[in-house]
Length: 135
Image (cartoon, rainbow, N blue to C red; front, side, top):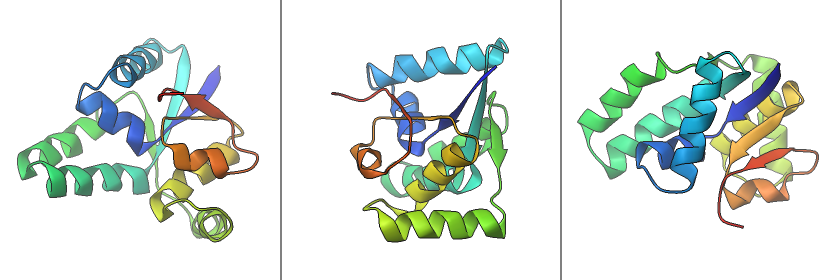
């Protein structure tokens, strides 16, 4: 079974129904629900989505995400200390945000693609991308 990691960018596009990424994420979620692929997300990125929605939208939308995140067909992984060091090393080496470093570290851990359209990830060496953003 194919494994993929969800980036916060992908989920925010889906929540905001921005196309074409929103539909592509919906398709990936449906595949995971059907057991065709395995989806993962870092708990750091789940929290990033929450703070972004709370800061830029509403508390209600942020709280809706908190509830929804527990029902998505994705495993939310809380990083270990070793994984925190891995993410910190990526942040120190590449021009990506700290939260993005957790998504990249998780994809590297499972040797799988990261679902994103965030251009920052293009700078990260040895990271497979499942690109859903604009070219």
